[in-house]
Length: 228
Ligand code: ADP
Ligand code: MG
Image (cartoon, rainbow, N blue to C red; front, side, top):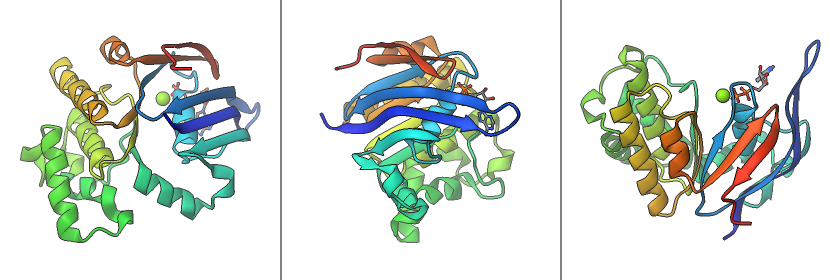
């Protein structure tokens, strides 16, 4: 089991008066093949942790290694390349492009991989079907419901079949039936060998995970089921 993510005493301080210490010294390792849930109250630092873990943001101090690479050694461009090839990220706020269709939004998940447009569209069609949204492929993102937008964001993260998927509350906007479908999809991906880190408020999702990391006030308060 190789580490796909390693944080050592990672801290994140957002400047301001007073500054906000969002992550206050987190050390943890996530290994290949794990299905991990990150739980904790609102404001405990979960999204900040995801931003560091995916290289979208850099720690104020401490170190972050993604698939063995210390991100402090990588330029923003190299980091974006690493993310495009190795990671799928489902954002809490989706970050879809409003005027593009669902299909074109999903296809952007392959934009930085040098995949030809026809292949991108075929893969995007597939990924939309996996989240149960084939019938919405040609609707603009801005016309979709919150739950549908969330599923488009999930499809975009999965379209390149990345070895590691991070998802920030991926069932937060879904009714319980659709949420159960997304949980089943995450379990399938995990069974196929994908490493999954999911931030969640859902007991069902947290219970499906083998490991649960609880954040409180920017620190790891509990870590159960860790293979270490
Ligand atoms: P969670 O995802 O667990 O709800 P966050 O990681 O979003 O928590 O936020 C943790 C803390 O950091 C909160 O107090 C939040 O207000 C603060 N925070 C998050 N992002 C920023 C930012 N860009 N600028 C300033 N403060 C931030
Ligand atoms: Mg959050």
